[in-house]
Length: 214
Image (cartoon, rainbow, N blue to C red; front, top):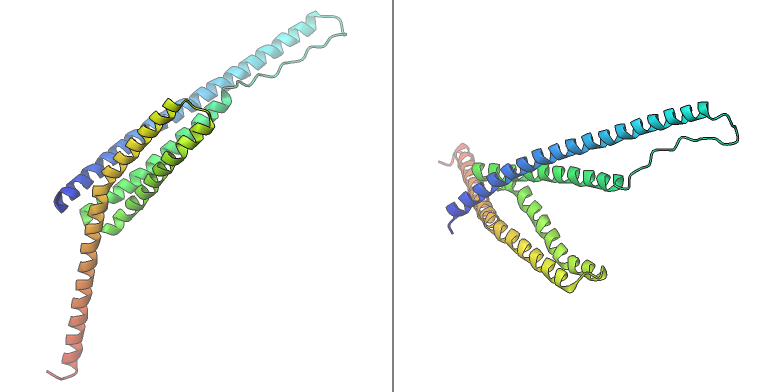
């Protein structure tokens, strides 16, 4: 695969990543809005229930003439699902921000390829190194955590195989982009060195002419 093919591959990959990130950001934002709407509905339901309980207690106090018993307004019960809902909201927000960050990195990749500036590609390269490192760490730690949790052996093996396959595919997808980055960086460094050498030579010629030794 030549440098041109690496360039086309990296451009297509960067554009696709930007598109997918935008789709994920929009869908995640919609999910967060729906989640917030559901929470507001639950709060309104709790408020209505509290009002009904207060009215029922007031009516009961008016009817009952004895003072030996007293009625108290029960506090609204907090569903056990509130905590998972809060956790899911945190997950959605984290997922949304991670997609925004990755969209910025992919945009820098595309801009760096088009403008032939490897410095713009560097955040994308380093970011993918971090992601791949986390994937490899997950492959190592995942089976250990599953064994400590007494998970079935077949389930542990299946998850490990799937994690290894996913991590390997991620590395294979990333390798051509990294090769292009290294080639562009070498070319860019050589161009800078050549430009510096030419500028130095031109400056020496000017100083030589002004010295009168023509």
